[in-house]
Image 1: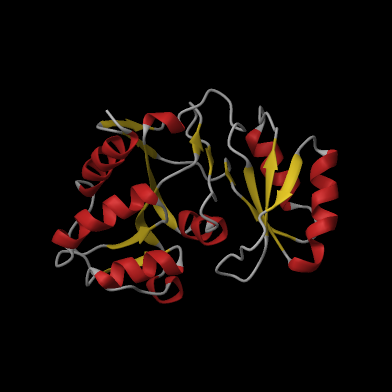
Image 2: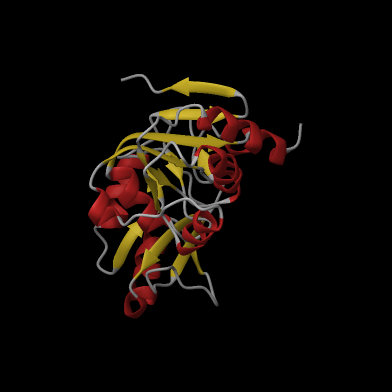
Length: 217
């Protein structure tokens, strides 16, 4: 089975978790695009969606799904998104599409975080995928030097700005054996907006293709 077919399967499973009358959080990426296409047939059941990026906002609106601001929606019952990597403890690397900050905010504001992936995203230890770090523009070089001290090789994602207007550093060659500790450490570097480690707020539900798993509490 292809990765795209697995993504579509995961989206189909996730759609079954959408309940009537909800305002849902919707992330960004190729798996989420499958989810949005399926959500279009259930749009009359939900009150609307909070989007993690401009691209997702445009796609939701294209399908006639109402898009709401998080400030108006308040806490959300459920958030659907993909990931670039996920470990056995449901800790994630996200941000390959550059929406990591808004994704992290919506995940934090949601009672349940559902992560949809294909099997290629499952890893034993995070770090094979470069770790995105969104930074304030003036601090880019400073933050990069601090990331080198942590053992990484940061690469500026040139010709790219996040929806927040910030550059992103992609940190290569990290073996992330203590994700929660590293997330706290990087977030404390002056000039960092956020890091694409979702370890402190990990996924609650993981859907890989047609298989669904629930995180043990």
